Amino acid sequence: MALVIQNIGEFFTGDLSQPTAPVKSIRIEDGRIAALDPTGEQAQADTVLDAAGGAVMPGLVDGHVHPMLGEWTPAQDAIGWIGNYLHGGTTTMISAGELHVPGIDYDNLSPELMTSLAVVTAATTGRVRWSGVKLQAGTALVVPNMTEAHFDRLAAAGVKWTKFLFYPFSADTTEARNYVAWSRARGMRAKVHTGGVSRSGASVVCGYNVLSWLQPDVAAHVSGGPIPMSDEDIDAVVDRTTFALEVCSSGNYRSTHRLVTRLQARNELHRLTLGTDTPGGTGVIPRGMLRNVLYLASMCGLTSGQAVAVATGNTAKAHGVDVGLLAVGKPADIVVCGPITGSAGTTLTDAIAHGDLPGISHVLIDGEFVVSERSRQTPPPTKRAFFCCCNTGQFEARSV
Ligand SMILES: [Zn+2]
Image (cartoon, rainbow, N blue to C red; front, side, top):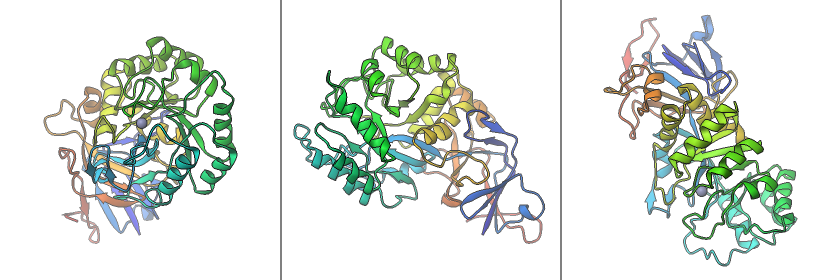
């Protein structure tokens, strides 16, 4: 089965080094992008989606979510949140820890409990797709007195991430640095909560000093989640470290502006990744990743293409996931969208630059339509994509 998306007006690659390209059509086979601008036989397809001159971008990658059990989040007593985020354009999510499990006693977090929690989540919520979304769940929240055997058990369960959230950093840095090394030796990556304490009240303050010796793979919500580190620490983290720096919807807008403009001035936007840090105290935000993109483009000086690339290719790369780029051979995780009637922009590029929410009509994951006709979370785009049948060579609109 082959699908062609044609009549594309704007094409966002997800690649920061070349965020847009003059691609007019895409051919998708077996869930992956088989050709850009196919001609001749390559242009023949079983299904054709006419983008009606609208925009195509990679599915958004939320690098910081807090799942618990399937689509239920006890953090806001809500259900169905993953499907709602899908309708906001998110096709991949990375768990930053399943800390919202009801009844958990933050004063008694043992190595056994935290290892088991990650193993159980990886084997349940993380095992299947929810609403089609690629969710990486089962992130281990490390605590003191863990041994290499705990990390062996995590790796055997398929856990991809360890996270410092409840870990009490002290003058003796040996154990924490061992955790990072033990993670990497087993193919796992390490993320660390930064800034002031989180809603649990049990996390610890983390700024430049800790980050400088811990050297994580990703420093989470550097501009606040919810409380940012000091301005001086943000500057030092940008200037004196090299790892990935995450911005989340839970953060401080002013600190985000400081962080992002400093990264851009140093030509280091490749380090910037995005997440929502939800569900949590900030709520359930189906359009959270889109709002992150809009803030970066309308207030922090990024082009629309750069902002989309940060939300897709950058975030995927920082988390080691093979998504986020629209290129031959890559998974066909695609958002078809455009400006909304009444927006300041007549193109999506202009709308995003102005900070106006895009309207989504279709979302694909691995080449399968998981949102069709229109999103239930955004207004419709002005230019509505439609399916065609092409057996006569004449395209005609039909509904799905
Ligand atoms: Zn978080």
